[in-house]
Amino acid sequence: MTDESYIFLAGASRGVGREIAKCLVQQNQKVKALLRSEDSRPELEAMGINVVMGDALDAVAVEQAIMGDKPIHAIISTIGGLPKDGERADYLGNKNLIDAAVKTNIQKFILISSIGSAESAIAIPPQALETLKSVLIEKEQAEKYLIASGLTYTVIRPGGLKSEPATGNGVLTEDYKVAGTIHRADVAQLVCNCLFSDAAHNKILSAVDRMQMYGQSEFEEFKLI
Image (cartoon, rainbow, N blue to C red; front, side):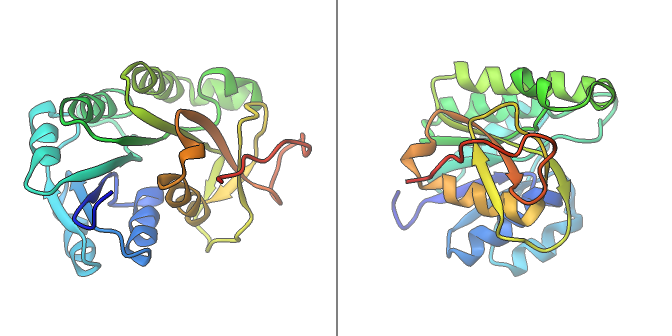
């Protein structure tokens, strides 16, 4: 990574994405954020973040945003959530980002997914699984698309998210049977740690707070060496 390279962040307007933006800025990383709405633009620009407007569901807009005039080292995507006009961004939005990353030779892609996706469905109660089914199906599709893309990837699946300040107890594990909750700020710290760790390359990792586990408390922590 050169001093001029940027981290491209999709989903910076709220939640985990906003926490990642704060974390990257604290680490003196140059950040370029894709926003669909102008609402959070002033706040992000005040943090020194380069903001580009565009909808992740618009493939052309995504490609233009990534190509731009600033070299991109890695893409971090936290997009998903409420449908727009009946169309969710969890799969299609991420697909557009992945396609643009392949086309522009981006070195790394970090996708924030969710415990409950793919084989980690075993980790959450059947009732929760049923409630989240449509979201988790799309998240799994996005994960599979990224893995098949040929990009160097890290998939991070947080457990149930809380908005309180970081506890410092966030951990990563390759054990897909693990479940629990985690604060958004702790997820952000783990994501920032993965960004420059070769150990995280091509890994699927669950993220939980070691003090907020459900059921299974014995697991092997993934070390970012």
